Length: 280
Image (cartoon, rainbow, N blue to C red; front, side, top):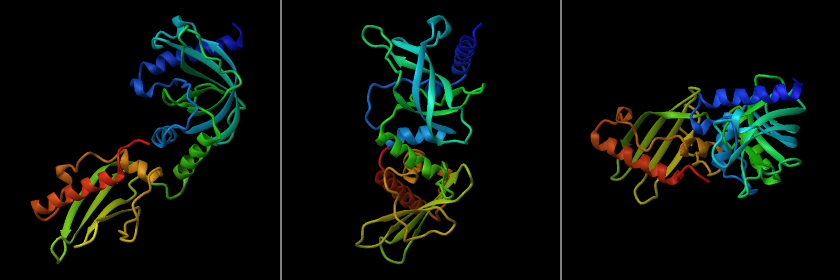
């Protein structure tokens, strides 16, 4: 059997085996979108967070995998075996093969034809495959059409992810308490978050009579009242907006009185409103 056909068969078999063991949202294939606009920040941040490798590639050759070898492909889709040239390694260890191979699911057009991807450039979010020169896409949307804007945004996200003081992923809320001040309407709520690394992340909400409520996030053990809220479209904003629960768990409320716990809930809801939904 020719080497290229052996590789194609191995990849197709691997795809079916892996896909059957993962929820549909984490399938290691990607659907190619016809759109060339910049994907939203949350989509790219999620992909970059999951991908040990981020690559810019030029497609050199595509081969359609027979339906019998890809029984899990959705209606109106086709599975392609892609051979591509790596143009840039945006994230990952050096030593990536100059030529790579991977599988991707693409939508057929109204006539059932497969899109022509040869000579197109894409940004891939991937992990190393089981064989040299093979990669596996981390999600169904992990092949993104290359544009200068897309690459700039992805590079910004990756830079934040690998920075020494990168905000850790949020697992939930450890403790939340409200302490009243001496004046009517004065008080402070502190919310301590659980993280995947164990590094500290806390949220503080300050209320003063006659002034608008202020809130801030601290990434150190010391609560910095001068800190500012995270700006939308940053990694810290993404970590909070897309990971915080809809409400504080009862076990995490540790204020002195039930009334103070209610104020902690009020301030937490205020923070969620300020962060906005996990999109964009």
